[in-house]
Image 1 (spheres, rainbow, N blue to C red):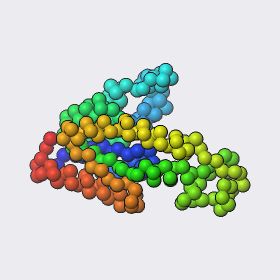
Image 2: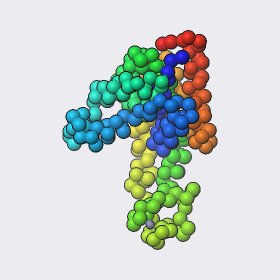
Image 3: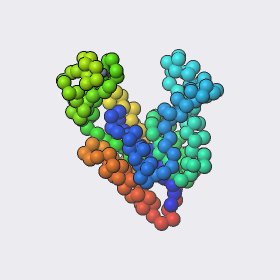
Length: 230
Ligand SMILES: [Zn+2]
């Protein structure tokens, strides 16, 4: 059976980070490859690639596909990636998607695309219900973890505020941006004969949702058939 490369998509607030971790623990023990983390690690290390990335960001330009692809390809060639990987935050463009197809094909890996779908109103309700204490930084949630006295920090009595990132229009803007960026990539995979498995990421607890993703991986493997290869 070919090793699996799980390509996990999910909007901000969909629980994608949690699911990457849970799926890794439950059924896909290979490395969790996050391009965001890789870029940050290079910047922190202060190496040549880090300097290149910082220069691009300072001038307000995007990190080019070619550089991101090169980092991912290098990471995929490490011995610990041979048994399977989770790709998080990659591919982010159609050009990157075409490239990851090629890389996984070369490595004999089976790509499985999972889209964690959460109703946007639900995400907005959850994130916009967050309040923060401007003094001590404690976060509250009006639905799951409210302060004892409405609008006031339990620890120091300061008046709670809604962070800029948690304002409804800011959240909706980010979700819209996610859609505009992701839809063409999912369409690309579908057209290319790779099924996009949509997993409901909202109607159960995180452990049950990770079970669904693992079932999708299992299913993709069994559709390969005995001795199947790419
Ligand atoms: Zn406080």
